[in-house]
Length: 156
Image (cartoon, rainbow, N blue to C red; front, side, top):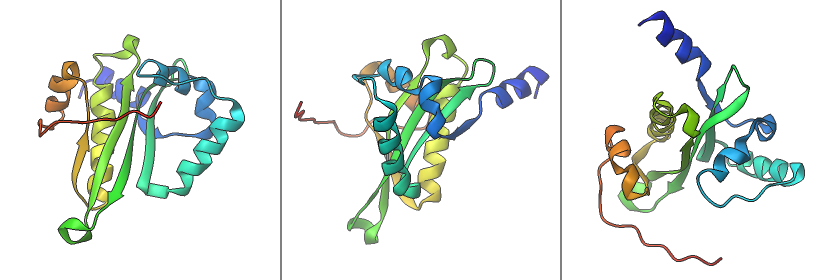
């Protein structure tokens, strides 16, 4: 591995979300993905604590750019406990986004890899996700394949 690759590895390390990440642009990053209103510090803290209580069954991970101290990539996974397949588990990957100015650095692949390994370590028999057609090739490069179709019903 080249020295530049090693330094890139250290600068862009995947870790779990921390309470201080709100001030590092975490919400603004999610706003690049979908509708995500601004949250007060109290709202963020309350949701953070709620997710923390789920332990390894719900994990939000981030990549912080060490140079700018900004959150530049994120994704989450929750573990669904099933009755089928001998009470097995399924991992659901959600909310994967990389800041546009950091795309092309394999950060999305690092996030998805982290979440996939987490699902495997939790004993999931599979990990699934929904994505836009334009992101299909990216997820195929991460080892996913298209299966069936997604349906949705919004309440808001």
